[in-house]
Image (cartoon, rainbow, N blue to C red; front, side, top):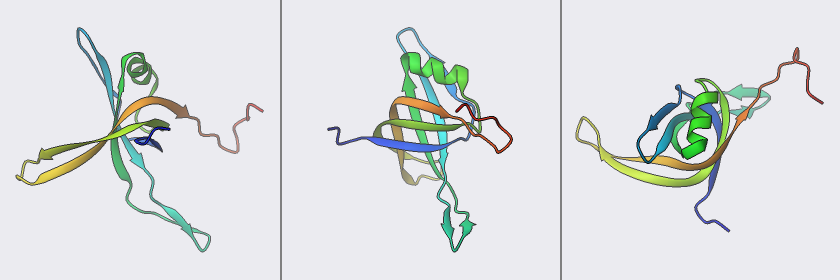
Length: 116
């Protein structure tokens, strides 16, 4: 069993960013995870949690060619941390998912004909 494993569902906040080099292909994703909840039958909106994910190789190309800003995705992999100093000189900690895979989730409305 993997000890460092995460799976998230969220919406892409920007167009996937593909980078290719001589020996690598990578795709960076910015994902907004909804923190809203239902209380007394009403939806309470909360600010989303923003996470970054990186895909490598063929999965990176697949994501860059098929995903766009606003798409709902499920991403899984291991979580890593990156320490950095921002423009104001404040030390920050960023969490990133080194993604092993992803699914593009499809949204259906009442007007859509379901495939089953």
